[in-house]
Amino acid sequence: MTGSFLDSNVVLYLASQDGQKADRVERLLRAGGSISVQVLNEAANVARRKFGMSWAETREFLLGLRGLVAVLPVTVETHDIGLMLAERYRIAPIEATVRVE
Figure 1 (spheres, one colour):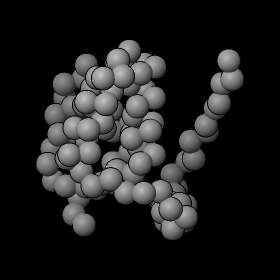
Figure 2: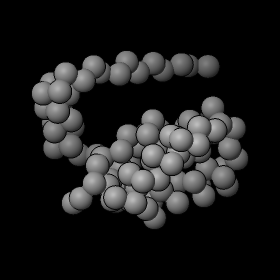
Figure 3: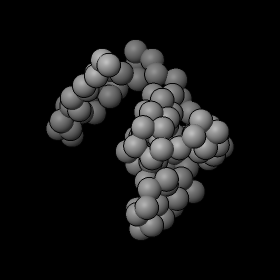
């Protein structure tokens, strides 16, 4: 597999108002790469909640992503590789917060 693994914060720049960042992400996508199903889930959440996209717009955005990159399942092996990379490159974990309304 060529290219990079792209996280949700990266692919969401495609839908942002920052043209320079969107252009950089487009170049990354053209070089190949992959995302996980979790990235699709996170992107859907942000598209709806922060960007105010309708469900139809959200589906269209996600289908566009799925057409550009490989979408990988999240497995225990994927999780273990992520932990190893976080330790190796000293990547700080992201604290997840769940809001119950």
